[in-house]
Amino acid sequence: MINQLTLKQLKLALEETSHSTHKLYEEAGSSEHWQRIREDPKYTAFWEQLKKGGEERIKEQPLPPQFSEFILFGTTGDRSFYQNKRDHLIAGIHTFSLLVMTDKQNPEWVAGLENAIWSICNEFTWVLPAHVGLYVNQYPHRIWDQPNMPRETVDLASAHIGFTLAEIIHFMGSRLHPWVVERVKAEIERRLFQVYFHDPVPQNWELKTNNWPAVCASSIGAAAIYMEQDSEKLSGMLWRVINVLRGYLSGFDEQGATPEGPAYWQYGFSHFVFFSELLKERTQGRISLLADSKIEQISLFPQFCMLGDGKVVNFSDSPEQVKWNPGLIHRLQSYAPSLQMPESSSLQQPTSNSWIETSRLLLWSPEKTEPQEAERHKSGSIEEQIFEGNQWAISKVIDTEGHLVAFAAKGGYNEEPHNHNDLGHFILHVDGQSVLADMGLGIYTRQYFQPEYRYNQLNAGSHGHSVPIVDGCRQGFGKRYFAELVEHYQTDKEMAFSLDLTQAYDCPSLQSLTRHFVWKRAENESPQLLIRDQVSFLGKTNSFHEVFISITEPVKTAPGQIMLNGVMFFYEENDWGVEIEGVTLDSDTEKGKKFYRMILHCNHLERIMEMTFRFEIYKGAHLAANLQ
Image (cartoon, rainbow, N blue to C red; front, side, top):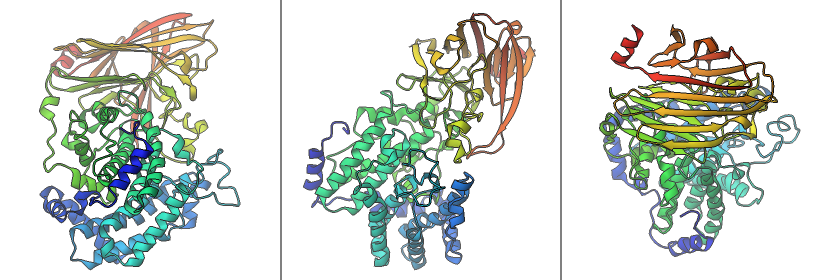
């Protein structure tokens, strides 16, 4: 619906329902709903912890971040110290708002909420240091060394705070001191509406198709729905928001995939859903942005990415494990009926980190979350998709012993959102472990988002992915480094996915390079992956290396055979010298994680070469028999 919606339709829908009784986020306005989740045994520990946290905050108010901490990003590149301290400050808003909604008899919760709101309103800016001056073409340069501060902008954090405060005063404003309510309205007007709606200069994120426009525009739009009573004015405000969201949705291909992966899917798309449902309620159902065939495909994307034991297909800057908001999934099931609830171990638990997400987790979740695990673990079942637009292939199979085995590969281009130089890279997952793995995201610093630093890091550079190094050349960064989807097909027994990787390398000697994946998954047979690389050179070449990234330590069991836990890797012994390099990486989500780079050195260089590698899945008796 969003692409067909006109300004006239939006304006009429808002005006014709302006004097009607419409309840925004109706679930949050129901004391019965809050009582139900307050008494739900599965949330008992959460409420006890929340109450304890509130009591501790009343005894000792957290201190706001200092100026010296604010400028750390500019001086050292560190962003975590300031953000952690400010997150702790803002957490009071989330903690006390949830307590106020479920315990109306305790005036201390109201006072705590008022103080928390007042503290965040006192902050010089709601924008994170890492995002200050984001509009500057030379960002992050020519910002922190200038005498004048950059102009105010709207970023992920400031938009989220505005949405949060607007929703809180909508539901709790009558219990708060009127000065606090007026302060919130004034600060949202000054920090969001004046910056965004009163200035035609585009925000940096309005030009993008990643999670930023989804979070920022949706949050601003949600705040406007709560605060702006003039329907004519509101229509103009929301029209700018909706046009940005159209751009955001264009970043998904027709099959629903985003190159940012499942973690950023949840972050961005959840905010789009929150805004869309508020707009639907404000217009009494006349405008439903989620009632759209492409939205249904986007809603299903994470289902293909879910692997065993909470793991996901984690290409690009994605953690290996993602916890899913059951409230979000349950709400999307109304628009995408085939979307399944994730396994219980993969579901988020409520936290005090966000009123917006946690309240919807609590209020939108079904009373009983019943994942379709029996159907998922039916032997021989296959769930797969080739996402042609973003060049992802994902196939999940339940093998003969009831274990989930999955293969995923990607093409695309090397300037995607949260990009890694990883064209032709793949993941092979066996029973809860991504044996052939992606290293995932690194540590978010100023330097990490600068290409000259980023792509020298293993997790983002092509040398840290399962792709070739061609005559000493790694893949380049930029839109001109891309893959072409040459061929793909699916039959009852196999899936094939072929990429031309020639343009991924800036290598003078390279003439052509193609990679062919054949995923054999015939029923009642152990799955196996065949990789065939074909390379030709313009003249003499000095080296050619194949690199494979494993999460488990490789063990050579025979000539041309390397065991990787439940996967046996086969190669031509005479053609390759093998070097194993163990590496330990830190990320924003995990410290000291061990990976292994299997580096295969080609022993016989020719102008035209074809090489084949095979990965066979071995489980149980099959594994024991082949190790004897």
